[in-house]
Length: 216
Image 1 (tube, rainbow, N blue to C red):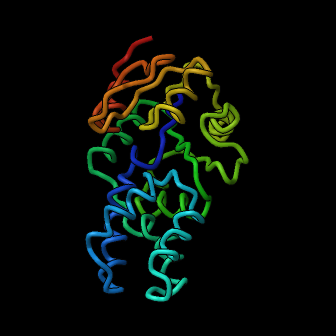
Image 2: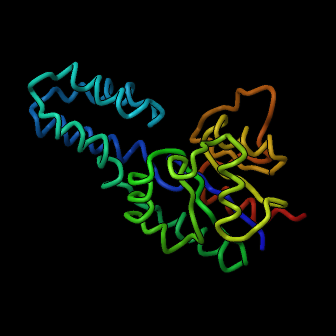
């Protein structure tokens, strides 16, 4: 059974767009400047800034203007409540499954939030499993999280592919294990010199199509 290991945030779902919508609603609800949207997104850094650091930055900036519970709700649930799955992604996952591939989500992050995204987007009905770094105790690019993903479907990593948007977490992780990979570019140029993805694609649907049509 061939194995497809796919990243969640900004690969299967547009996590940044979901969080941006949540921040805009948060600012409007509390009468805060709409222009602060850019600042919050910079602090968030695509979800790579530790959640407690984002919460602390918001608390420092807004003080008593915003209840701590509102900040926590934004950090914990903002993106998870708003993620949507593109029809093209849904179709591509269905095609992969019909072709006999086992699709497993491999994501860094907190278990509750990442599983909420998976279920809210309907991905729990389209993939055969998932692993979250907090639960596993290892995060990408560490080999153990990819090995745990394969174990969830009793598959081997031999012949597996990795799809993701992060050069460091996804592509470097695949490279270290000798796995083939597709980098989801989102319009960015590849700048790493010590390793490269097997293929590049504009979006996850195109990435899955590349994998399914690559022989050998």
